[in-house]
Every structure is written in C-alpha cells, then in structure tokens.
Length: 269
Image (cartoon, rainbow, N blue to C red; front, side, top):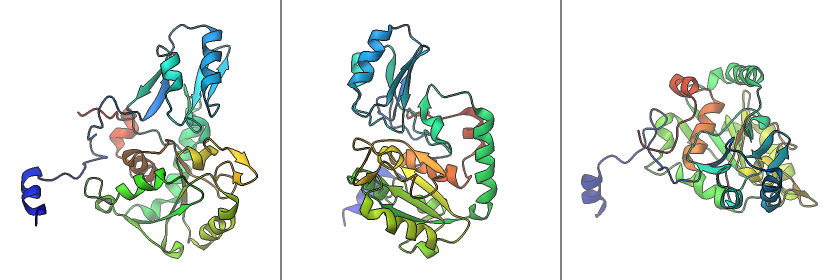
C-alpha cells in the first residue's frame, strides 16, 4: 500500500481555495491582459490579424481582448509583448458576457445589479449544491479539468458541491462545448428537467462563443442561444481553480475578501 508512506510524507495536499490562493505560479497562462503601453495602429492591426479566433479588437482608443474568444494561443503576446501579456489571475469568471472584454468596460452598476439578482435567486442553494455537467460538443480538454475538481487536490465536496447524473436532482447546469446541433435538444431537455432555482454556467471559450469553430451548420457558436447562461467561465480550457471561482460566484459563496479586493493571482501568498 504505497499510498500510506506517500500520505505521511506529503501531508494534506488539498487546496485551501477560496480562503487563500494556492499558487499556480507567476508563469501560469490563465488569461491575457492588455496594458496601456504606447503602440501604433499598424502594430495592433497586425496582432489582431494574427488572432485565430478574432478575439482582438482595435479602436481609436487602443486594443482590447475578448476572453470569451481567446484560446490563449499566445500569438499576440509574442508579436506585441509590451501591450499583451499573460496573467496568472485565475478569477476571471463573470455574470455578464460583456465583462469578458479587457480592458473592462465601465459598467460596474450594471454588473453589481446582475450579481445581486443572481444572489437573490440562489439564496436557497448556499448550503450545498448538486451539479449536472453536459458536454455539448467539447474537444475533451474541458472535461479533463472538470474531472480534476473531484481529486484530492481540489476536492469540491469539501465546499458542498456534488456531481449528479440526474438533472432532476441538479441545482447547477455546467455546460462545455460549442453547442453542437446534435446536442441542442438534449441540452434544452436537461435544463427543463431541473427544478427551480437553477443556475447555468458556460465553461470554456467553446461554450461561451464557439471557440475556433464559431457558428456554423453544425454549431450554435456557444450555448447561450440554447439555454440562459448566468455565469461565464473563460479559458481554453478553464483551469480547476477558475472553474471553482465560477461555481462559487454562481451560488454567491465567494468570500467577502475576494469581492472586496478583486481577483487573486496564481502566485503563492
């Protein structure tokens, strides 16, 4: 039984998140940020053309990145590193699709109103929740990260979060994949079978905006047109810590410290 000496040697490995950051490290590619460093319109246009998903927009005020489309390929970071950088910030989930565009638009009042409405709706879910995951056309990478939530490192059950196979027992619908045509009806039926109150989370850029494929004859370009999405979790794929942040945001269980100070980074405290 090799797990006995290993356990004695390593001690407790379970994360303490969200009480504190557990340190993915400063080099972890969690999101792309945009700085206000001086640059030219031609340089920004060149970076925008290099983006395979069209996540970069260029205006008279500068460039912006839509994290709902960004697959973290790093082309913009390589081409224009003084403007585009990787960030280890893991708390990138939001209640509004527009807030995934960085630099973020000045719409704090609207975002707060959305959060309060969701918090009021899920007040009954604050003790423990059951989560139903549906793959609506994923490439499989998102599923690996979701499966990691149940291992001893993340252990979502310590937070009162449990996976269930039945939508009739589920409080949260966690959807991955670009919303393929073949999964449209099963996804709607799953949503309809869930009791109220219920929350829908779109996990990963495929579920939010269709990823590399986008909208086409076999894809709906995300799941937002199939079910009403309450929380958007960007990433390609979203990391386990980012998924945890999105789930806790959905049921209003984030510590007040995070809401007050803003996102934690992946660096250890």
